[in-house]
Length: 178
Image (cartoon, rainbow, N blue to C red; front, side, top):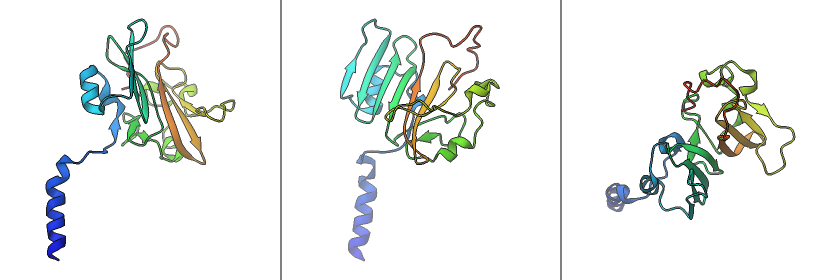
């Protein structure tokens, strides 16, 4: 019994020094500069400032992040790791790798504000997706799209993507994805 109490006390005292594996909402990366991203996520395995200086590329073992250089917004994000989540504006707790497709099916994304009542923004199966690529998309007609690789009803990978051009004219950018 005495050993158990000592173990618990030592563990509680050491807990702040242990690394945290809490889930990170990628919207929390918006607005961060290079030093801040490195402070939050650690040093990337690789980094590229981009050829035109309009984007910065951060490569981590479980994620690739592309940030716009001027506004410091997440422009693209790829992950196959459950440590990152997306869509917290629309789903409590967001979506992460390992979640069931049922969590996505509970929301009609075409009816949320960012979906703009466009049926093409709902969760859509992509029948021509290659074996390794994402096979579902939401917000297909918007400035920010989210793609999913789903196998046996489970999310294996997700990717947030921002095309360079506005999706259609006139595009109302006052309705935010974030």
